Image (cartoon, rainbow, N blue to C red; front, side, top):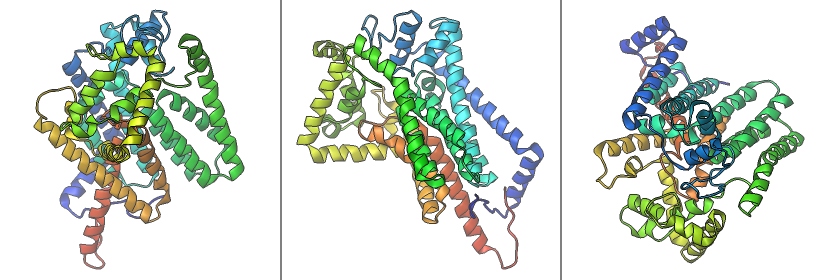
Length: 460
């Protein structure tokens, strides 16, 4: 199902030259070249930033404990004990690499870096194909792909952090589910086997990466509503829930035995909730300082902060998180308007990240390059959202799938707090939308200026 505005018109010799170059090189070959350059840029950046050294964050420390046959443990420091901080699936990629190539060896760190970069490159390619499925022309798709591949707007994140945190893999999986859903939506009929496979994938992703899993569930639900009858809704919805319960029940039983509490997914919500909602978020003149100081005060992983001792005094990580949830709820009850202000600011920051997101751990003034990145990102995000809204107003209903993919991942971080890493699942989608909107707008303007009966050449 194509959209009328999909093929932009650019009546210039430059555009014709670009078109001829693409035709000679071949679209597929050009896409491969762009993705290879993007991968090399990010691997070079990873070596520059970290020299392929281990990053001892919670996922990494749990992975080390798993390889050393200590189970899911030591998320915060050695001998901190059993944990449910990251869920059952998130540390497994890292643990598998350490098992094969050695714990924290240079080869293992290089493999993890390559896997993280691979998830980024795969996401770019899958989104390129998603927008092709939506009928967006070759010109805006290639322009967006060139931008995400070659413009270093979040190079540090894509080259170093996504190899250790699950959000990079989760974003690639969400993009794959989006492509599968779009292809199924375009078919004359949707087979039950395909829906069952999507139900299983959605359940796994919900456990692995909750924000992208939430988006996957929304994509599956929209497909069911658009293309199936109501009995299938309940069948596939029930099957998705059954898969989720089947995956998490052994984990829940393990947590009841090891932690004394039947935690079904993760135990970390209280920390995020308490960091996001407290007085300092509004009274501290620096939002960056408000975030980091609260993290240093509460988080057990941070040294030399008091968070670890607070967790022990509360009776362990589950009791500590329950205590933080209760305290934060009481604060929200007594400060409802302040909580609303924080929630609205979180929503804005999720889609339009402030400059301090790039300089979170620095005490120095915000760098000019970070300000420039924030301005560019904000403009692209707003343009992408405006394009989405415009297409839906024009009843291009298949773009509802992009609405689901863009809106649902925000929910967990509106009720906690957003960071650059947390918003990664929606960043490239919005960039592709922004370029599609810009090219369609240019097409319309240029078409209006053409004399009657005169053809307008296209770039795609």
